[in-house]
Length: 199
Image (cartoon, rainbow, N blue to C red; front, top):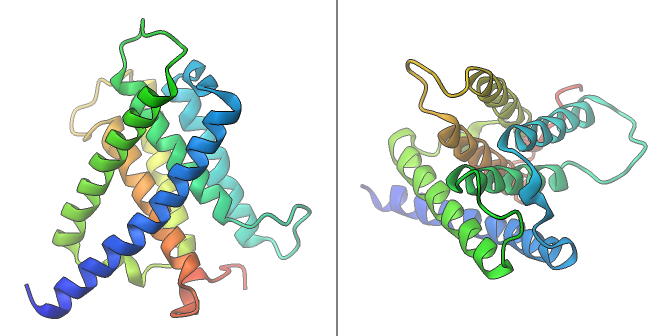
């Protein structure tokens, strides 16, 4: 590994951790206000919530006028958190209590994030920093593609032949969303990455 490669990876980890910390902070704040109400949602329902957010991002990217000026960054943060919530849900037995102590929920979220970060690091090692040359719109398209795969796996009740499984897809979607957040927060360095594909 060259010094340049090492520097690029370190930069990615710093930026990745900064954006994931932002997502975690919102998760904790909402849990303070609402408790663990999200625990009543089945993974398939969380998949649908991710789909709604990814679809809204595409609509906002393609629309020149917006009635609600919230931007797409909150939607990507929501995608990250819903993906990690879904991973938590998948890891729990079906008869687990709906209510979960906040400390336990935070620990489960952190464990899901650690595994998602490890996957990102492994794939980034194999593929290099290829995601840096991708547009935010392309990352959203990848999330939508993964969602269609997850929906199909859910419809098959997990009985797949070659798929890597639902959890791996949730991790990929969370990582794509975190890459998009990095682009959105460093667009001054490379404005083309946060382009509006409708223009």
